[in-house]
Image (cartoon, rainbow, N blue to C red):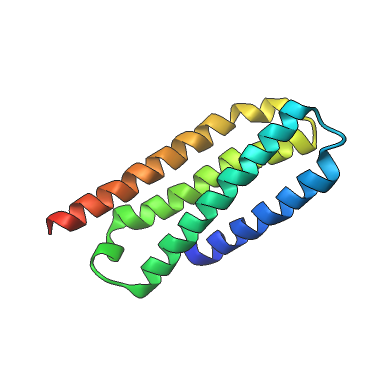
Amino acid sequence: MILAIGALLGFISVAFGAFAEHGLREVVSEEHFRFAMTAVRYNQIHSVVVVSVGLALLSGGSFLTMRYFKLSGVLFIIGISLFSFSIYVGVSLNIPALFNITPIGGMSIMAAWLLLALSAFLTSRS
């Protein structure tokens, strides 16, 4: 399931990036356009990570069965959703209050990276 969600998140990043470039650029402020493109960039980068985690989980192995590894994939998904989608909707519908959710997504992404590092560390010790 992580692989499928990662692929969908990748699709959304391309779709929203195209929408922002061709539909939003002329109707939002330069600052909000920059926010949107930052959200697209984070979405794209972390979608690749989620797809990688999904592929790795499918291949099996002791490292890959660790709960921290799988949890890192879930946290990446949550983080991307909260970070990027709060900006997507906030900019698209002019609801700047949604930007208050963005840092929670960023913290989720940071936690995901730490869990991924912890998984690697624990695996290297076994």
